[in-house]
Amino acid sequence: MPIIDLRSDTVTKPTEEMFKTMIAAPLGDDVLGDDPTVILLQKETASLLGKEAALFVPSGTMSNQLALKAQTQPGDQIILEDGAHIYRYEGGASAALAGVLNTCIECEGGQITWDDISKSLNPDNVHCAPPSLVCLENTHNTSGGRILCQDHVEEIGSNSHRLGLRVHLDGARLWHTHVVTGISMAELCSPVDTVSVCFSKALGAPVGSVLAGDKGVIERAWRFRKMMGGGMRQAGLLAAACIFALENHIERLEADHRQAKQLATGLDHPAIKVNHPVDTNIVIMDVAGKSASQGNDEALLQHLNDHQIRAMGFGPGRVRLIPNLGTNAEQMDQVLDVLNSFPGEVN
Ligand SMILES: *Cc1c(COP(=O)(O)O)cnc(C)c1O
Image (cartoon, rainbow, N blue to C red; front, side):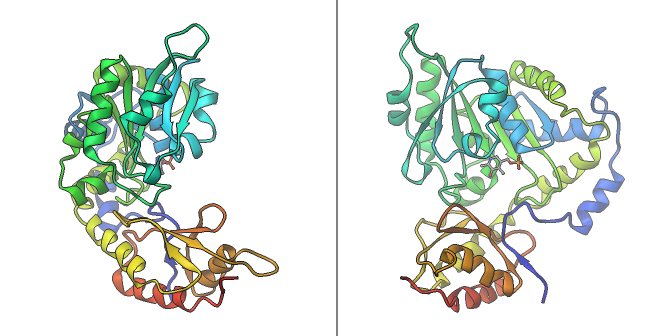
């Protein structure tokens, strides 16, 4: 039986058609600025996101960190939600590379509001790090792929700008918000100054993210990309996969969302619960109980593994599953059979 890989939506491999467009793509040297396929991807993405300019980069981490670098000074205060990828999972880069003070706010379901932010902004006082940037994440990964309320995003944008703060959106999975809400990508991004999107997540491209914003900020980010070693030569090979993904793999995300809901509603086990609304493609399961030697979360990962199913441990007592381009509804039925027959008990 083939492996069902639900560890992440990054595990997908390029489809045959995607490979074909990669091989056929016209190439140049992007560090010298003449790779036509990279130029096209940047133009198309900027236009889709309603921004002036865009920059192709190797990863979402680099894209987020360039946004920080290009819009802050060392010693500035930035505000983020406590579970934010920028804060949790980027190797401490905001401190190491941008040199900023991270102020994190814990918010239920990742739903950060202007009220939370305004309370945590440092005063204009020589003792304090001056605030300069607010970071949002849509969808919000650690709360289970939750969609940010667009009214909140708009309120955060206008109030931040009124105080001279800039706003960055980690939109690694913003496509999902668009597909579920029907709000255009440009409208979702209009309250923010910069946005990072990932093509190597659910869209199925092998590599690549894009940072979009105004010309000035993208020019600064471009310099920092070179400084950090992110200049890539015949990168059109990769950009072609991203263009293919843009044109062919956005609307199909609905299938991933349906599979995620199928998992959440079909789950029937006293020790395993999904404690969040499944807005998009992420299912985080809380796993209770433990045996003498290990927690039930580890035992569950082992049990899944024994049945050719891969999932990801997501902190103590938590396991994350993400249906993706390589999975289907019948496989989710198989996964449910295996989950519901987990021998672990609540104790
Ligand atoms: C995956 C992810 C990123 C970027 O990750 P890379 O692995 O560096 O591409 C950024 N933000 C969120 C919310 C993510 O899930």
